[in-house]
Length: 76
Image (cartoon, rainbow, N blue to C red; front, side, top):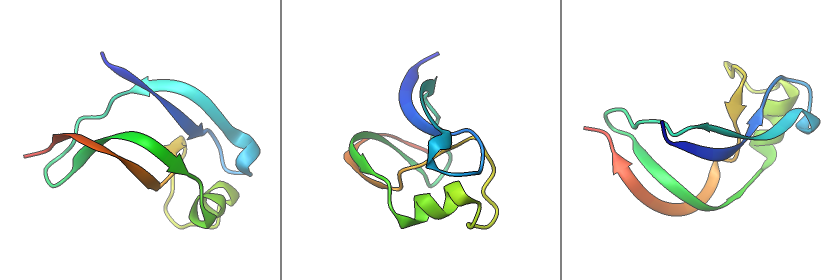
């Protein structure tokens, strides 16, 4: 099992609920790409998610939708 480091929101309630941990590297599904992230940031959307103000988000979830990196794998 390959792992990666991630900042994970364990529960809704604020950015103080973020935990830095190792997680399993996901396998991309059809139409998806796996990106090795070089840089990432948290933005207003991430804050909304952490506060429970973004619909249909279930925890735990990895935040940081603004990323820069390299595609390492693609789904079929």
